[in-house]
Image (cartoon, rainbow, N blue to C red; front, side, top):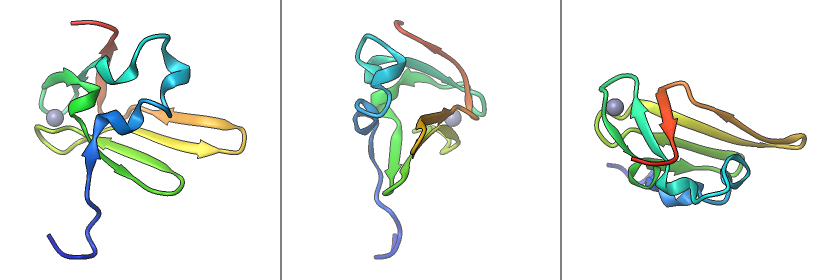
Amino acid sequence: MTAHEPVPVDGNALAGPLLFLTTTDATTTVMRCVTCGRTDVMAHARVYATGVGAVARCPGCDAVLVVVVEHPAGTRVAMPGTAWMSSGG
Ligand SMILES: [Zn+2]
């Protein structure tokens, strides 16, 4: 890793931006990766945050699971690498 590479944080960084999607803690949401099939909670994703949003990557294969962008019209969420999400187990 060089000094210019972004440093990821864990999926807990998405708790606030994804609050509008669920009435429960979004970080405990279970997700399945399309690429490798890993099933894990959002909190275990590797999140790269910028000034305009964040990208959550699979901790197993580094595929992009979720993209969150703060837009003047509201928060926009794409889930290109997520097969499904579940509120539990
Ligand atoms: Zn994966």
